[in-house]
Amino acid sequence: MPKGQPSVVPDDGLTTRQRRNRPLLAVHTGVGKGKSTAAFGLALRAWNQGWPIGVFQFVKSAKWRVGEERALRVLGASGEGGAVTWHKMGEGWSWIQRDARDALSSEEAAREGWEQVKRDLAAETHRLYVLDEFTYPMHWGWVDTDEVVEVLRTRPGTQHVVITGRNAPRALIDAADLVTEMTKVKHPMDAGQKGQRGIEW
Amino acid sequence: MPKGQPSVVPDDGLTTRQRRNRPLLAVHTGVGKGKSTAAFGLALRAWNQGWPIGVFQFVKSAKWRVGEERALRVLGASGEGGAVTWHKMGEGWSWIQRDARDALSSEEAAREGWEQVKRDLAAETHRLYVLDEFTYPMHWGWVDTDEVVEVLRTRPGTQHVVITGRNAPRALIDAADLVTEMTKVKHPMDAGQKGQRGIEW
Image 1 (cartoon, rainbow over the protein chains, first blue to last red):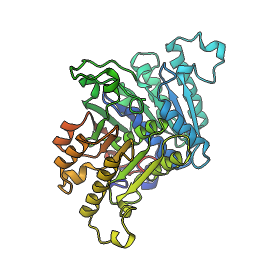
Image 2: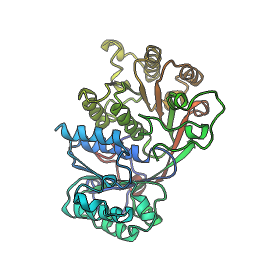
Image 3: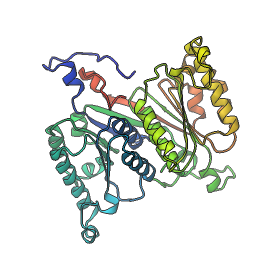
Image 4: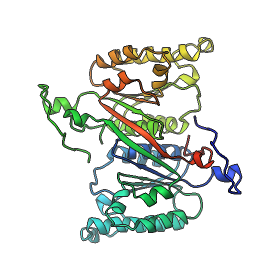
C-alpha cells in the first residue's frame, strides 16, 4: 500500500518529514526481467511530480530502450511534468565532440558517463537519475565501486538515484536504501521464443 | 540483450516469426518492489509500437498509481503512439453507472472488472493489457483462477497480457510465458522510512 507504516522508528534524530524526503538510492538487480522497466516506471512518477529526470544508458547499443526513450522524451517535452534529459553511451554521449567519440573504448566511454553523472550530481541538475545498466562498468572494474558509493553517499540536496543491472557489487547494495532482486521464474526464451518488438524493446 | 538467442528451438511446427509474434502472458509477482512499475515500463514500449493499451487497476484506492496514470494518459493523447484506456476499480469502473457503483462490494467490483477484461479480449480491443494487482482477486477466490487461465489460453489474435501482484496462483504461473519474481533485498521502510511522493506513488 502506498503510504505504509514503517516497521521500526529509528533513533536517528530526524523528523518523519525529514526522513520521508531523504534522497533514495535504489538498485534493481538480479537475472530476471523488469530491472530497467521498473526504473522507467519510477521515472513516470518523478515526471508527474515535475522533477527533472536524467537518464544515463550505460550500454553499447544506441537502439536499446527505444520505446522508453521516445515515451520519456514526449513526456518531457509535453510541459506537463518534469523535464527529461536522455544520455546514451551507445551514441558516444552527447556532450563529447563527435570526432572524439569514435576513439573511445567502451571502458573509456563508461568512465566518461560516470564523470558526467558526478558533475550533474554536484550541480544538482536532476532530481531523479536513472543509471541504466550501470552495474556492469562497476562489476567489470571500469568504474571504481568505492568511488561510486562515496560520491552517492555525499551527494548534495535531494537527488534520487536508481541503478539497474545484474551483478550489483556488494558495496553498492550495502549503500543502497532500496534493493530489489528480479528473479527469473520462467522466460519465453526457455521455450525457444525469441524476443519480440513491443515486449523486449 | 534485446534480440537474444533462445536456448532451445522447440519442435512446435511454428516458424521463428510465428513464435516471435506469439501473444505473451507475463506475470510480475513476489513481495519486492517493481511489479507494477515494470508493467508500466512495458506499456511504454507498447505505446511506442502504436499498440492500443488497456489498464485495469484492481485496487480500492482511486489515488493509486496517479503518476503512471497521468503519464500514460498524456502519452495516449499525444497521438504519437498507441491509445491508452485506463480503468480504475477505485472509482467503481467507468462503464458502470455512477449510482450503481456505490452498491458494489470490493468482491463484486473485482468481478465486474474481470467481466470487462473478458469482453475486451473477445473484441480484441487492446494489444497490451495491464491487469494491475489482479493476482489478489484470484488469490482471495473472488475471481476463479481456472476461468482466468482458460480465457487467457483461448484469447484471440495477438493480445499481450501482464498481470501484477503478490501471491500469483500456481495455475496462473503455469499458464504464463514469462514470470518474474520481485524479491525484496532491502527496503527503506525497514529502516523506518515512510513512503515518499515521487517514489512510492
